[in-house]
Every structure is written in C-alpha cells, then in structure tokens.
Length: 67
Image (cartoon, rainbow, N blue to C red):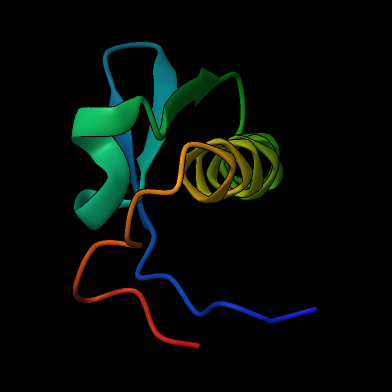
C-alpha cells in the first residue's frame, strides 16, 4: 500500500471552514465543516476516496501528489 502526501488548504468561508486538496479539487476533493479541525479530518477522508477512485479507474495520480 502506498502512502500519499497532499497539500491541504483549510480556510474560513463565511460561517464555515473550507478545506481542499488543490491538486485533486477538480476531482471533488473539497469539504466544508463547522471547525477547522473537522474540515481537516473531512478532507483527509475525501482525498483518500478520490485517490482510491482514480486508481480503480486506472487513471494517473495528478502531479503534485507525492508518494
């Protein structure tokens, strides 16, 4: 099993917190939450699902995602 390293952006967005992985955002790797910690936890799960789906589809992992 490979491990991947992602750049994660977590920032306030109105009354919520927005989190994304810029290299995977076009594939849906974004999330909102009530706290920055919750947003960070959510984006970890979302990024994992996006990478798993990308690999299952036989697509390459985007540049900028390290392993």
